[in-house]
Length: 232
Image (tube, rainbow, N blue to C red; front, side, top):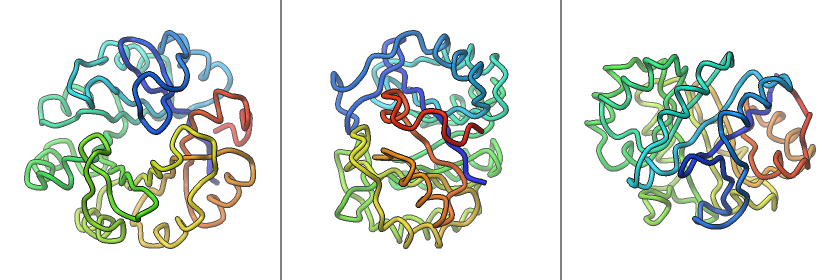
């Protein structure tokens, strides 16, 4: 059964939710550890954490990830700026269940492959970030890479834990999901997750029906538009 995974994006020690990833937009949600604890106490057993500062190369928030990992979640998946084996191993040592990679998969496949060998393919997920041109976006969503379908095929070659499809055109907007995502879902091997634009129960139901195992929700969740649906 599909479940919601709340997302916590961290920048400068604060939990935030940006609109289409643009710094200074969206919501400032406060202490990420306190927020994670609140979610856990509400019954959410899975969490999606992104270190925005690490992703942008301006710092890191590993101390907060370390504390979140102690709360008791059944599943923690972490992304943002994981570009070398040492950082990947540090995060895995915190009992993080899955590490999420994006740009490095499409810009330095050999290094990515080395990291996968080091930490194990069962701990690796790839976020394929794309927009309405159906192209993969890399380097902070500033450059376009291959077609989404080609990206999925490339990731499938490694038989990893799974793929997150992130529709950045509507990410952080609650303007609705990419309903064409059904064409991609059937191609994914392993775990299937979706993020971007989720706004209501109908979006959740659609994504479940086309085969997604988990749905990552941020802005709509914190605006209480879909809170309480499919507590996992």
